[in-house]
Length: 90
Image (cartoon, rainbow, N blue to C red; front, side, top):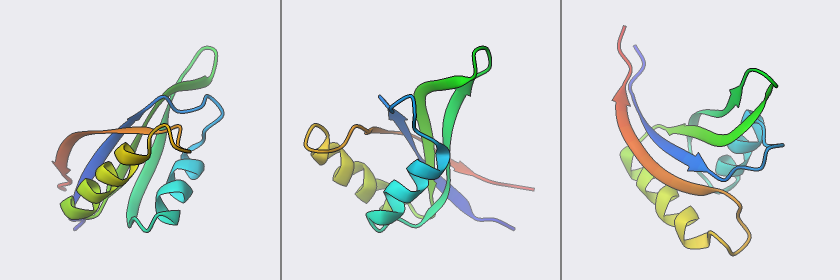
């Protein structure tokens, strides 16, 4: 049974960003990413500029939030906001 995940909501993503890009971006900074998802609209099919990244622990989520919030405007286009803690259940 999967454990809980801790989510970050991202805004101001480049329209070209893909889920794979988000995952690689967070992994490169040392995060243990469970999943990453860019939110798309259907018609026309393009990014909304928002995304979600799920991390394994609350500590990692808080560290990522702190790390990327401090670096916004310094080389990062992504802005992170913590949205919720969700527990997966079967």
